[in-house]
Image 1 (cartoon, rainbow, N blue to C red):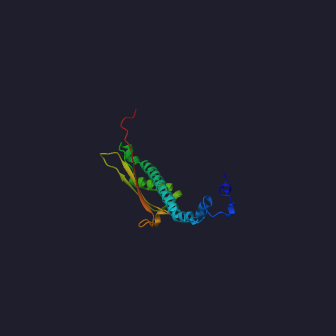
Image 2 (cartoon, rainbow, N blue to C red):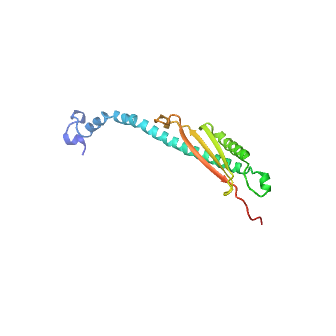
Image 3 (cartoon, rainbow, N blue to C red):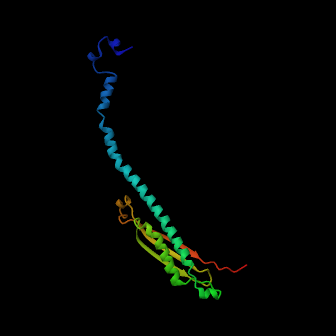
Length: 174
């Protein structure tokens, strides 16, 4: 049955009722979606930005860790050849530190746009009871874009990475 047959009059002469009334009710709520989008869009953008900054932070940490590992390995290769000829394995302290810092810094150079305030230290330990070791410590500030709006993080996030490498004395030369 059509609406015209139920009432016996033309649809334009009938009062507002049924489906026509509910469509007009929806038209009055048009701005609701715009208000919700305007309210939640900044929250969504900020959330995505924080996730992106955390991804940058974790990536920077991995890059700094790899650079420190390479620096420690390079510093371990600077042996004191005179003492090695006598049968004692020692790392030349000055050359070992310099080489470790040089290699670490050269591996951090390509990421300078991501890192601020790079502080490197290398310590050689030629203990008689343990194997000679070199420890490389890097402290860097990672720049963030969205997290800098949070209190205390205006200047970036500081991460510290420590890497250690040692020379193992070979006792059996077969």
